[in-house]
Amino acid sequence: MKKIKHEKELLKEALRVGMIYAEKRGAAEFEKTDSQQLKVEFVYKLLVHDKVIQPLAKDQLSDSSMRHKLAIWISHQLPKDHPLNQ
Image (tube, rainbow, N blue to C red; front, side):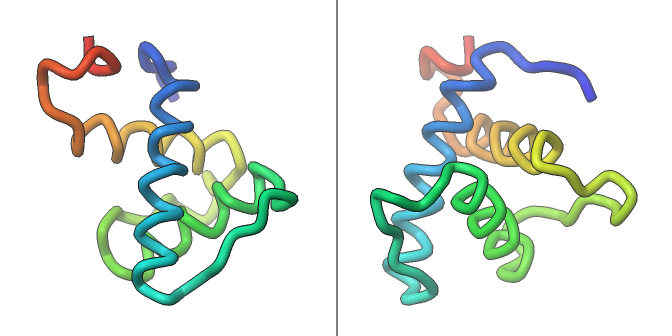
């Protein structure tokens, strides 16, 4: 798995957008006390369930690979000239 530029910031944006998506869809309500790991797992699984992203292979399913997948997903959602895509 190749590290992408601004991956940390992209993950933060992916979680922000994913949590809004989940709440508008009525699938979840997040609390400030929820861990980032819990949010990553929930947003990843929801996007896979809704067929927004392709699932990782079962043998590749880990916290770091879910984070990477979410960062890639949001980088494709942002405009090409967005600072995080530079």
